[in-house]
Image (tube, rainbow, N blue to C red):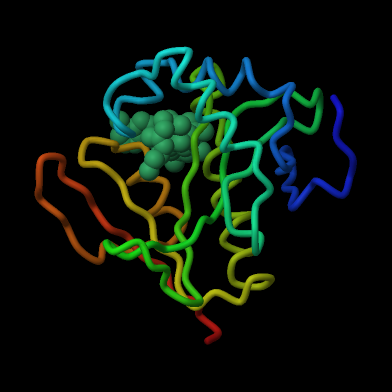
Amino acid sequence: MNYNSTSIILSSSRLLFRQHIPEDINAYCTMEMDTDVRRYVGGQPRSREDAQQRFTSALQPVTDRLGMWATVLKEDSQYIGRCGIYPHFNHDGSTVPEEGTLAFYIARPYWGQGFATEAGQAFIEFGFNELKLKRIVAHVQAGNEASVHILKKLGFELKSTEVAHRTFYHFQLKNPVT
Ligand SMILES: CC(C)(COP(=O)(O)OP(=O)(O)OC[C@H]1O[C@@H](n2cnc3c(N)ncnc32)[C@H](O)[C@@H]1OP(=O)(O)O)[C@@H](O)C(=O)NCCC(=O)NCCS
């Protein structure tokens, strides 16, 4: 794979988190076209064309270290998803200073092996210790029980529930030090 150590932002015991590279396109698109992966994030699987279009955005450099990172297995460099903390956006598109949003997307063949939990823990430590965030939030569509379970396990608390066309749970975790 064509990346070097400078593109790696973070690592955990089994995972590396790095910038996306062109070689990730097939694994990325396969995830975006997977009905199971998309069930609670958008609802519909993407077409190949749409997924490829979005991959172009994923290739853009992440600013301020707030963004979604290619998530790869250390043992064989396999791309298994994308995880990270991106800015906490208000409804008007502005960002909340000193806050971030945790998200994780793992490819279907790798579910149930603790990878999202491991990534979540790594990014919480990164967000609080390196980025000095005061609060990390996470948004989960109702029904996504695995995500709810993981967030609770990571220490998040339910802040509010937004009932609309799709119902969302808004979770938060405050930096214990600030
Ligand atoms: C949600 C997702 C990230 C989980 O990834 P994963 O690597 O399989 O997660 P983990 O293996 O770390 O943990 C899954 C946990 O959920 C639990 N779980 C799975 N299905 C569950 C369900 N229906 N109800 C309750 N808990 C469930 C597992 O038992 C496990 O908990 P445990 O380790 O305490 O036993 C993955 O399924 C995914 O990418 N889904 C599609 C995208 C998505 O929904 N992202 C989250 C957006 S908020």
